[in-house]
Length: 346
Image (tube, rainbow, N blue to C red):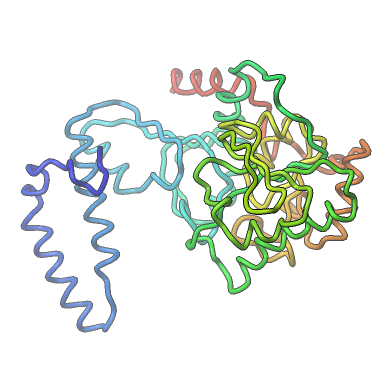
């Protein structure tokens, strides 16, 4: 509806025209005076005001439920309540990322997946009236409310991948570290060729178009899975697109060992007593996984530790003795009911 703001009501624009014109004139003066372009900030703020004025003058409700932290804002909260809204609620979908989208999160109610997963949000000066650890709303929706498929293959190691965009490039060597963790997977595959290993991507994540990524996995036995069945190989490597899935939960739950760079599934899988290894070459991915006791319990920072932990899990050793699972993700089988009861009673 709001693609490029082309469907915004002209009445809303005219309502704020004089104020916006005055604001832009002041911004131009200050930008010229300070030799700094402030228009990016002012345009972002003014677009939010116009967008949410349009929405909440046409749609009146008591509660606003949001599923992604980077769509929340204090401006959105204010305008929602300006037109009669009572409370806003947010379901945690992602691990909080410092220096990235959703750093500053605003919602009255925050339904966190674990008892401590809100802490990173608070460090980013996010504002919540109440925090309710309830488990994963999305794990409940996707995994507990669908039929299981017998077609899902079983892998010895599944890497739950994600594409990195420019805004996540948080230090000079960030992208090199991101590629290096895939190199660890290739080293393991070459060293132990009998292992059945796959990387699970998502539709539109850009991985199969990433030339450096695909070349890195040339001459390996690693499978790549996205959400479409594509029987043909890419160039001459052994990159297969064979299995179809919109979600990765089924693949992860069917794998002997899982690993990831920063997927929230790494936390969610703990609620099934399945460990997911977070790969952090050099311990520099602190935007997603700070170097503290809470996050260090789940990650490895060099290949040797990765291989060692992989075989411990692969051979059935309990590596969760020191992990307080509920701090990362509560059992999510009744998450919908918990949220319903909280909203009903509040």
